[in-house]
Image (tube, rainbow, N blue to C red; front, side, top):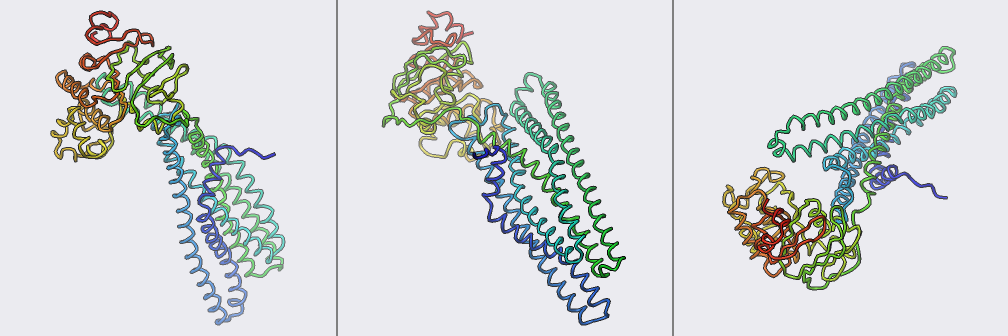
Length: 561
């Protein structure tokens, strides 16, 4: 029966395999470096026995030349081996970041569920870096093992007892190092989780900074972050304490081991079983062994932290998609007819709705959660718990969400702008963009900027006012020219005069194409062909805005209160 590999360990294995060539190159060069390092004490012992002790100047020059050649080889192998190892680590981290971003941006969604944006950013940076570093740990571990084996062989040739001490003692030290890394692995995982959560909270607070200032909630926000940061600091200190404890104990054990090797070598020299040069070689090899053994301790710590980070990465990569891709195909061309039958999702309860192709429909709601659930269904960020949503007779769950979104665009109320020029945020220049800017009254925003649409705006569009951002976001949605467009509260931050102009521009720009305006704004609802009211999660009213204001008290309260 085949053993199931834990997801975190599987990520580690795939990461190392993906950069196998670089790791192998670095390991070979590193092994050469360690071989040379282990050879140096042996050569010094030979110099003492064959040149210094006999007073042979020619032999001394010869062995010094050999040492010089070895040092040239050491320099070469270290330089290129380290480069190969760093390349393997950085490339692996890069590939993991790409895989994580691809998963997060997958049209099926699901990876972001239960995670703050800052947490995902932390996983894609710090955790990916730690897992990538495992490649360097593998390479240096192989190199250190080579150094140990060469040292053991050299010591066996000098003295059988010394060689046996190294061969038998090293596995014991490695096993103890592995045991000592377990607490570090657990605390490293907790550290990364707390750090990711703190990053997420910080990003969340920065995003909502203006709102927090507006409602005077800065003190509460600071206190929330202080608690989160304190928890992260505590986890980091515990992880650092575990790492220091592990390193200290391993270093102590290593020192005891080296002392035992030196003690045995000294007794053998005093007994005349080995020469002075061999004693120098043995002591030199014993001191050299500190390096490989410290490397093993470091590699154990890297593996412990890498396993913890790999488990977090694996959880994101293996996250269940929010919606599944279907194989159905939409008719060509897409007419834009929508139909909801018995749709329930969250606050939406058995909602029925028909939208004719080319219709401009207003959707008012007494419950914002019901409006959001409708947006989720239409954009397929979630599928209905019961009921069905159809586009031109094709159920949305039967479609690939990526293909659906080339036809249907749901423009969220809180959609962000990106760092770059206004043109970049609008998706380029051209006739469609100019028309969209005019329809959303965003051409006024462009004219107010120093370089027009070529002006750089900051991340999230924070260099613009709230009303300017909303107009640019609406213009971006209109410029896509989707067959079906759903906009959610696109004018909450603009003045009444501008809102009326936007309403007229929206109607004119989308003439003949299906458009849903989910809002309680009278100015926008008044220009629609028809309005439906969501109350209690169901469609309870359907008619022209003016008639509903006059005849339906619930609708009147929802849009005029």
